[in-house]
Image (cartoon, rainbow, N blue to C red; front, side, top):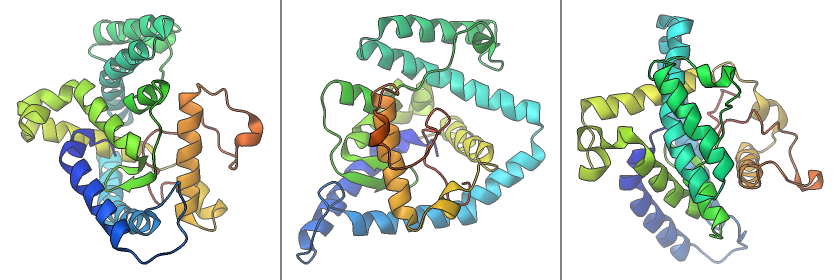
Length: 263
């Protein structure tokens, strides 16, 4: 779900509670890449239940009442807004040619596409790219840190938390109604983020049930898929084939949390 600005309120309490929980736990064998596994598994269960009883029904209702062309237009608008952050991250990663391409994509879709309602840029060979602040931090040499499952957001890492904060700062919706500046969200800003989350969930309703059919342990599947997907994005797809443990097409792998029962 794309409720990124909420991470400003969630991140620090979450990290503190997880560190305290690990410090008080009995001595046991700990996976250095996932030292908070018990905490993470509980959060994944919470996210699964939230999706099953709230997000999934909302998404189905939204899909039922929303004409397909309106649904596509809403998705395009949020994608166009996302291109602002993509362009900034391009520049921060010193991808100058891609910065120009993504900046032009945003301008074309904003003007010719009527605020992003139509994806004109793709038709003139200005493709959508996926760059975020977590990738930027990785390019700058910041290590990922331990694996971490966030409430609402799903799979992440210690670095990913700061990536979410950076992405929120680059999203103009964060500043509506005071937003990220005041730490509160009014009806307009909050409503837009909820709409984006529901629209994203609705777009994933028909996704193949990969995890249910392929995974013995859903938690391990999500963790491995997330780690490999982030590596794929950070390295721009230039990952040796023998590094993969999962047979997943990461060109079509959504950067959002893979919702339970959506796969």
